[in-house]
Image 1: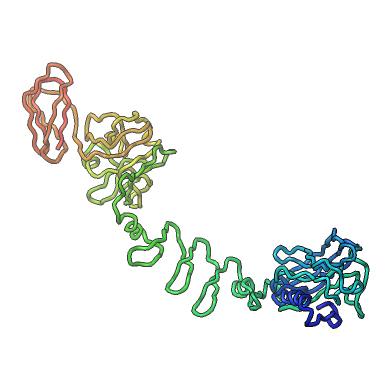
Image 2: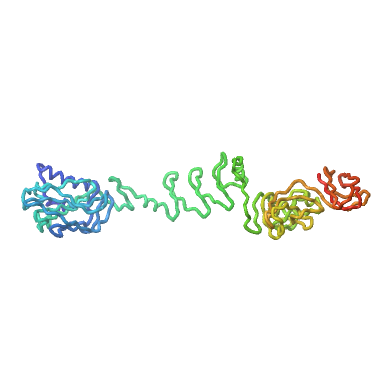
Length: 458
């Protein structure tokens, strides 16, 4: 239709070619491509037209056209005319022109009343038809047509009615099917930033955003937020559901299979500072005031960790560890059973890579000086002057020194059982050992009046 469709020249049924072109234009509008407001085409010159701003339907979605023009429109040949179609191509929303046939007109003084020249056919149904333009050998003439006028300046604006057009944000039109747009539906249900949409028992439902340190997990029917507290790992054991695992469950999960071949338990190659450690630990209870780095033993009577000292078997031959959590009597502590530890205050004078022993001089200390009395028990190697590779030896022996008298001497060996080996080593020349025997308490040495060292071990 033209803007005044009642005066639009109506082709007769016998003029099927012209009628077909006009029907194509209307078919595009019915497919959802048509002008809504503005977009009026007008003659600018003999070779140009201008198009005003406006709105149009692009497949049922309202779009805005900012306005534009077409220039360099060529004139027809002498005594010929042609009809040009001005349209918006909805594939790229640009203004374009399509020419019909260039022919001798049925009536040189008419426009749309003519059956010749033929108007252009519709190239695609997604063209938004704006106007038909009459072009003569003089180009676009400043001529009006119709009574009342349907074309001014040889331009006939066309307004075919189409299906409903929507803005595409609240309502959508898909092939003529009208529905509420997804954004509107979401904004109706979701009320706060971070909300999640899910399908409930019947309709869509809202899950409010989770708090900090929560994760989304699936319940029996609906999703829900699960809080993850500190020191918590989420997992699933055989036959169970996904949940926050307890320490026991996590141990089951991680230790239920053997360590893979060529997979190592790696200790820290170089401890970064005083008070650092790397290795296998055990929690327990302190039986005295113990500091980080103290060498400790587990007392038989109380199971508490106390300061080790090599001057007596009771404080040196049992289970050993290194305190890595300073504590006091009756309070919790953590003890390194195997690994590396750096304690600048307690390990200040180690000889690098030398064996390390329990000190028999200061409780809780270690030394790289080989003991000459008390209990001789190695507990590892010095990595540096203040770093210990702790790996306590389960074997130990008692040591001491004495001077022979020519008569039998009784020396307490502190083993608590008959030794399997007793050694007497002279430290002066000329000494003769006449007799050595032992029982569960003592060793008995008969030697000449020279100095010697002794050792006994189980």
